[in-house]
Length: 91
Image (cartoon, rainbow, N blue to C red; front, side, top):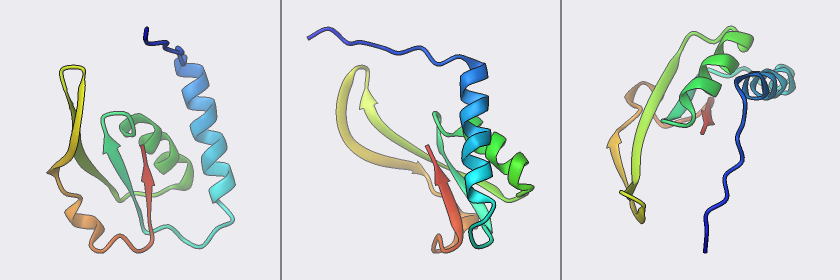
């Protein structure tokens, strides 16, 4: 089966991340954000800026070896997030 990819422009990514942040403004206070690398790093930065959130942590997870999907393996834990309470996870 051939893989089909949908290209997302930088403008679309930025617009959608800002729209997400605006929806989150009315929710209880967010202590910080955990970005799942690599796909969540840029959206997390945009959302953090919009929410004026200074605590941004990352978690690195490997699920693929070349193009073969394997068991998820955490390479770097988000230690600053503690138990995760009050943190928004973005991927």
